[in-house]
Length: 190
Ligand code: G4P
Image 1 (cartoon, rainbow, N blue to C red):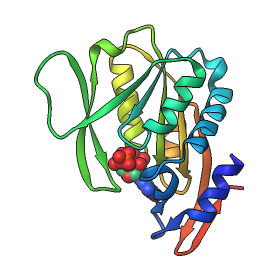
Image 2 (cartoon, protein in one colour):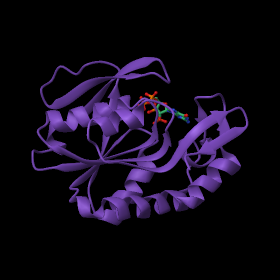
Image 3 (cartoon, helix red, strand yellow):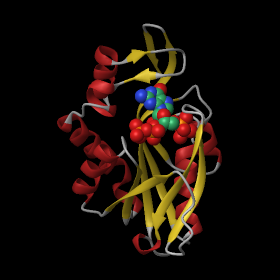
Image 4 (tube, rainbow, N blue to C red):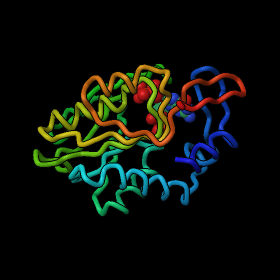
């Protein structure tokens, strides 16, 4: 997505070889026009996948997801990050480890928002180690539903997530794919 590449180059800051800061349009301030355009790209790619619902992981995945859900005319569900297990039986939960933040959380979904006939598109802002996307996929499949695809805004192609998800057979579509980060240097996959 050309306009996303441009914004990453103009406003993104590589804080290290692993972390890209894009607070001015995605993670803190949000650019609605850019989010809408992301929605048009995700819609175009996943249109023929017979998706029934869009799932995202709070919080930065919400903006691109809602724009995609609106354009695909689908419901959207936010998977919550709880700090501990909920002992009532009305939720699905799975433990996710964040390498970037060095912490665990319980990814949580109310059972009433999924059923066995669902074919879910998972959308998230970053793909790094793939733990969040894999956690979301575990929840979906644990409920007996299918993962129809995974849409990512910024994939760090040099980290393990993209390969891991593809090896598991998921159809991953990323709007920007970063090959290399270094202080003051951002390179996209050619
Ligand atoms: P993974 O799911 O691919 O394994 O990634 P990881 O757990 O390592 O990522 C944890 C959090 O850090 C996620 O946000 C993810 O979006 C974010 N993240 C990972 N790499 C980068 C990066 O290079 N730049 C930025 N800005 N964020 C990155 P989160 O905890 O879910 O927070 P939220 O922003 O969605 O609330």
